[in-house]
Amino acid sequence: MTESFFDKLGEKLTRKMAQGISRRSMIARAGSAAVVTSSLPVLPVQRAQAAAAQTPQSAAVSDFDRRAQSTDPTKCDYWRHCAIDGVLCGCCGGGVHTCPPGTQPSPVSWIGTCRNPVDNRSYVIAYRDCCGRTLCNSSPDCHCNTEDRELPVYRPQANNDIIWCFGGSSAVYHCSTAALVGQAE
Image (tube, rainbow, N blue to C red; front, side, top):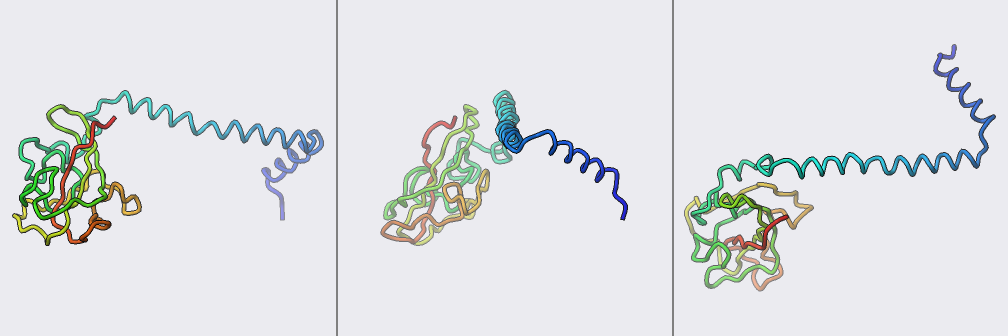
């Protein structure tokens, strides 16, 4: 079997390196190379973050953000409902952030970041299920499943497919609220 040009070149370079470089200096060079290469991936990330900071916020507008409204909180396209899944409590005798009488809020919630079309700012919204009564009988317009910026189930704090009534006195789901927590940065 004949050796290729690259095999001969590799052997020649390896032998020359073995003759001229000690083991200690080779380990020192390998350590230096490891330190230098570990800092290289940081540079593009910083450039990408700087570029994202310079782009206007309208570039990150989702489909839900484009059609969101701010007048009727009993509709699925209300701006706070960008990550809600369930029946709106506003259609069941409660409010956009309050549970109806006879129900209690779940002790845990999931979160979403929604853009208000009035002031064009993003806000953190805490979605909380109201529990203790059977499912609210409301119009199909009040049954929402918005998946804007939803994360998979293994990231439960931002997943809306989980019934969040566990941990309370009743695990029976009734409806969901959307409380404004604060402005997102």
